[in-house]
Image (cartoon, rainbow, N blue to C red):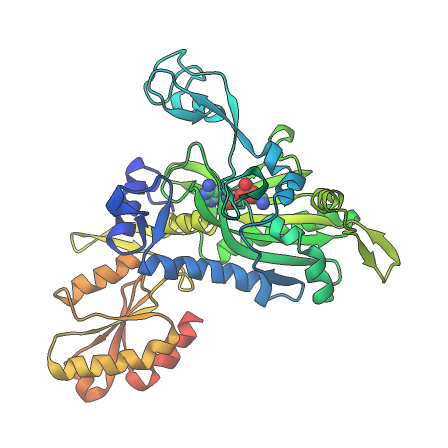
Length: 446
Ligand code: GAP
């Protein structure tokens, strides 16, 4: 059952404030007033986002024989972006308000203000200019002189690094089609209307799979990858009612796609795209063959035929996906007349797996608690916490950051060599021997 407040505008503010307060996410360059649509991940945020990326990487590469990984560079030859169509077509229609001087994406004005002729910021009618195309790629220059010949782009998607390495990977790894190449890395887009915290950023990451297939298997693999990606979210505890399919109509399709579907998530600011699955046909390899003059066909030695592989792509951003997991996990409830905020993150994603707390700062308890903490370090990131007053307050702090287990060392522990494990979601407690603690946590976190 969805939390009744989960799609209220305040919910987003509560999540942003928790992220700041507890070391998940900070505004970039904050002491200088921040940098619009750029964010930094704090000590817990980096662990959490790494866990999201690791869960994807494991599912895509470690658990399969038919996908290998890649880490291509951010800077690539300019011809790449001419071949891909980004230099000429990766544009958004931009309108200016002549009254308040704000800028908007022309296709979002109506959604924002309720009327395509009314400025979403100052509310004036008839002050918006005619749309002009604005390219979203960031430019920079290679070498000491800022001249056209040295122009390079910061990549706006990771996919092209995979296409230009198709042959290197296929021949070096002796891969037979069907097979895929997976990559996680930074991408940059000079978005006109960024916002909603880490939902739409100007510097972000992508997790992309390009799966190479014979032309006749297009539909089968497209359906297969749709299902796989949906199931990945459910497997990490996302609520089924938070997810929705969004099929692209013909006029929504990108220039390279025959078919595309998005997985939408119900964010506090509405149903929005979280990840896309695209049938890209043979567009990409054909274009790169044409622009580079290289033969990018594949020889199928089993059937003695040569063809340009088709590609099914899955493309999601770990920042946007992390935000969805945070929104899905955020919960508030009343316990003994007080509000309890709890992040019900899947154990695989929780940044801190367990926190060890001595009941008091008495020397013998502190020494034993440190011993217990050292003992459980191999299960994942753990914390030791003797600060901040009574044990209830310390439990609440761990609930807020999503720690699945709190382990309390009390005076009985000195005698019976047992500790109390308290679970985040149920708040139930049980006693376990210290000697069995590590094995037990490892098994429950696996
Ligand atoms: N290679 C295909 C591609 O890049 P896209 O729909 O433009 O497709 C794919 O982007 C995913 O990348 C999105 O579903 C989203 O998760 C993430 N993404 C795109 N732009 C983003 C931005 N400005 N900030 C954060 N994530 C973004």
